[in-house]
Amino acid sequence: MKKILFLQTLAATAFAATLAACSDNDNNGSNPGIIDNPVTSDETAISTVNGVYSQWQPLSSSFSFIIELNSNSLISFEGEESEAGPQNSRFEQTPDSWYQVKIFNKLLLGVSNDNENITLVTDAYKNGKVSEAGYKAAVGKAKLLRGLAYLYLVQLWGEVPVFTEEGGSTTERQSIDNVYNQIVSDLTDAESLLADYNGDPITPSKQAAQALLARAYLAWGDNPLTTSQIEAIANSQTDPAFSKTDSRLEKAVAYADKVIKSGKLALAADYSKLFGREYESNKLGDNEHLFTIKHDGDAFDAQGNHQTHCSWTFPFLNGENGQEFKDNHTEVADIDLYDNWAAEYPDDKRLAKTYLTKLTNPEDGFTYTYYAPIYTPLNGKGVDQSYYNSENEEITKNSVDRIEVRYAEVLLIKAEALVQLGRNSEAAEPFNQLRRRAGIEEVSAPTFDQIKREWDYEFTYEQKKVLNNYRWKDLIASVQKVSTYEHFDDSYAVEGETGRDGNVVSAFYAKVHKHLVAKYNNVKGKHYRQPIPTGLKGEDLGIVPQNPGY
Image (cartoon, rainbow, N blue to C red; front, top):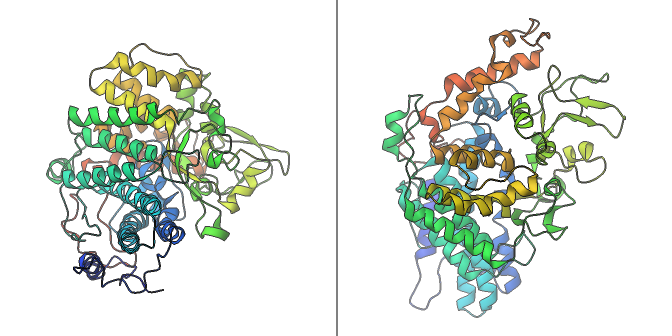
């Protein structure tokens, strides 16, 4: 079918041509850039908009390779040490590092798809081929996805180009405030267009838009750094001062309250039943999953959710029970991440789901250890434990939906914004809901430090970590906590030597040591931004200037 004259590439000329076609309307309300509009019904309107998920699905694991690897919590041994996963693990990313290239380009391609879809559906609606309900559902979804794409772009890359179906440049970087204004515009439109949450998290809802508005206002409220501010600290290992804008934090509270007061969402009674194939799509009817990205596995959507695959790349190949040893694509950064939590809150019900230290292989009956001196603990959320033999099967199926927003985030956004506003006692109610479910002590007035720690407890490895560090302006201090980890110690630097724990240092732990030391030494102010990358085919996108320090 012929649609808008649009090339699926990020070359600036292609985007410019697309935008010109999108905004060139005649006096009759028709669009000369549309030939044989494929949107002819409500069903085709939604189907056309759903096409944008082809840009989102490949990112389900890729986000972890920036958001989690650029932190103190995760390392990567994916392939050779020169490849993109280990580069990000060691804070050595460059403009041609694959995960930066992939995420940036796919998000902007998603924006372009959304622009195209909004034009097609609007044209069909004006010509009586789509009902008002069909128009609202389709355009509301497109605007929610566009707002979400821009929210990731501005948090990870700062000032980025802003272009919509109404025009705009694909190369001219806009101010932080301009990008957030576009995000708020899109998500506010989505809120007004979309229907209420109906228990299906795959379908964007009014409450999903409100939750993303709360997330956006919290991020914006913590005064994101401008290019000039980052330039001043690009080569420094000193974090900038934290600052905030209270009026935006008040908005974060207000939008979180809209979700809460709708009465349509709730915390699942059992935290362990949030992650996995048997719990996705709200199969248990607990209404905590607010918005998810659907995955049916590689055979169906060409890019199953490798968020599970990457943290469990080689099931049970840890050198025990006569098996060979292979590195997983992503590894928990050190045993201390598990040990410290277990020491502080040994009865926290989230701990056993978040970190695996022993697991029995149902195929051979042997128990495998994920703890020193054998291994680091495993990211438990990356293993679909919801059905029999999942530890072996998920490595090839990759069919677990990615959770973008769950209700727990809404509660914690509200609690954090209230604490930042000095209303700590008010924050106790949403904050304690999470701790009550976890089975740990409640507090009468959470502190900012307790809020920060709760993000780690509740959302470990759920692709929040570095975005929080950016907001709190503690990236460098947070990353350099690796100096307190067991395997940062120089006694683990050389394979075959004896570490301070009295065990012979394996090649695995020598590599863990290398990555922890690299994190400590390499993290700098420039890492409050990712480098503006090349295009998917290595072409220059024409977006200047490059972010400071790259």
